Image (cartoon, rainbow, N blue to C red; front, side, top):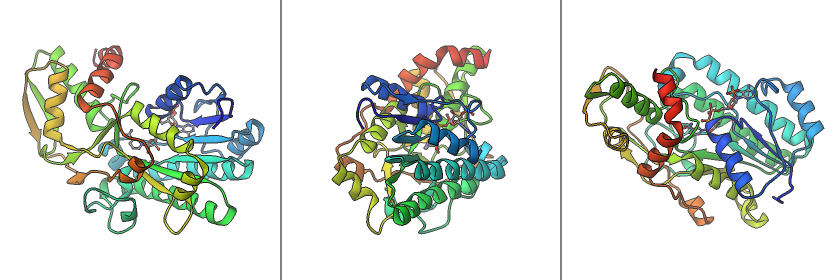
Length: 323
Ligand SMILES: NC(=O)c1ccc[n+]([C@@H]2O[C@H](COP(=O)([O-])OP(=O)(O)OC[C@H]3O[C@@H](n4cnc5c(N)ncnc54)[C@H](OP(=O)(O)O)[C@@H]3O)[C@@H](O)[C@H]2O)c1
């Protein structure tokens, strides 16, 4: 990517898209093309194709998606599969039709089988049953990977799919009905402190192990990938394996350890209560990140530091949400 390359970040106001934009600007990429959901509905294939033909982006980060935690995924599976399939189909096909040089499609680690061996390698895709609570979302993302691969094979495009682990950071969703575990815990701590309580209710047994990546680290990884020299980039997208790469820290913690860390960083002295009527989900989800490490990228922000940074930037958002 040249500093003047035309770069479209789809979903630029979301957790991932906003981090990618911040990092692109920091690195001096000045020619960003951005549209809000209201300005361009990416489920609309005609409008999306017209936009691509008019704006002629050279590089695309596809970070627009319908995203949510266990509760949202379990309650609205039809919305999750339909909207994600529609967005992906519009954007991937428009990238091909308008001659985009490279596309990075953002998926998620939930594409891997529920009981995949740990740490999870890219080649474990489609080797076993998925976690039922987010199967509809995961299948949409798997279809997106297959679409990238199929377009590369049939049309010679250069589409790559990145599978980040659980993410968190500034601009996260702190609404308890749709949020992921880390922002949900932060919000609960702020609410409990405000109410003068001394307990923190955690969903499930606290035993599942999860990996968390700070959104600014993910943004660096995404730009690193789309900016790889031709030979290294080709090694990811050609051949007999899906054009797929994991992005994570390579380290995980239990949900109990996570809750303890959130309480520590937010300075909340409390008792943890585990609500075992809630589902645990997959017992462990740790990505094998050796492929991206070999390409010269490693996560830099520790979990404690990332929680601190997220809390500092989200403090007013959280105060408002809980008032
Ligand atoms: N968050 C995580 O923990 C996580 C983990 C792994 C992978 N990922 C992946 O990263 C990507 C981005 O996730 P995120 O956490 O950044 O999500 P997010 O914060 O919810 O942001 C999603 C963005 O997509 C936009 N969008 C949704 N539907 C759209 C449509 N029909 N047309 C145009 N824009 C639309 C949203 O705009 P509006 O807000 O205006 O609707 C929003 O800007 C997803 O593919 C997700 O699978 C996320």
